[in-house]
Structure formats: structure tokens, C-alpha cells
Length: 129
Image 1 (tube, one colour):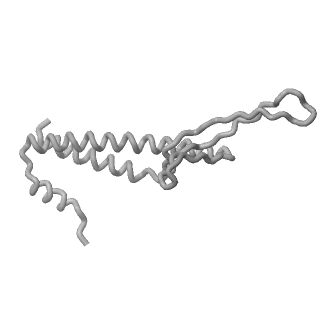
Image 2 (cartoon, one colour):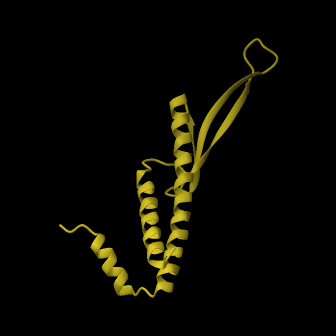
Image 3 (cartoon, rainbow, N blue to C red):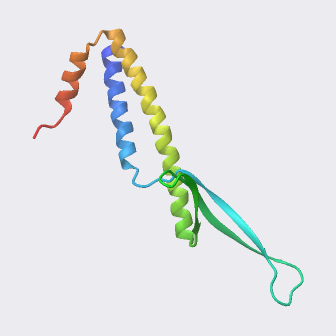
């Protein structure tokens, strides 16, 4: 593949990555924990096992500590699982974006594309009001 086509391909790929990032509407950086409790009921000598109970554990940067939130319904559990998957996907897309941008930089350097040419290309893609 010649360098110009490679640059076009990498620019298109970067745009698709950004679009996929924008499509993610909710995410959570955390994990789901499962908890079982042993409860001794009145009149019984052996404990009964209750559960599972689910919680999502996330880092709260504003408060500077981890927080846990009980997931009371199956809908909340499924939403939390989806949010965690979305975060993992977003993280992978970020890494892919960095890698693609590095490849684009290398291709432009080898093609001798100047900073002015890059600016002209990016300006032509912007929508003017």
C-alpha cells in the first residue's frame, strides 16, 4: 500500500474509533461483587444461607475512595454489567486510537507531510457555519 493510501486509511480508521467512543452512552469503571450471608433465624440452630446479593464497586474520584452500591433488581445488575463492558470497550478503543495515531504520525513523517499540510487537511474536513 502506498503511503498516501495508508495515511487515508489510518485517518478513516481513527474517525471510526472516535465515532465508536461517542456511541458509548454510559460506562462504569468497577466490578460486580457477589455476596452470600449466613443468617441464624429464630428457633433454628444452624445458619441459613441467603443470597446471592450483588453490588457494584467503583472508585469515586470526587470522594477519593471506593464506593459500593447494592444492585437490588436484575435490571440494575444487567445495566451494571453493560456499563462495565462499555468501560472496557472504551479503554480498548483509547489504546487503539493511540496506536493508530502513532502509525499515522510515522506514515506522515515518512511521506514528508509538513505541519502546514496537516492543518490544511484538517481544516478542509471541518464544517463551517
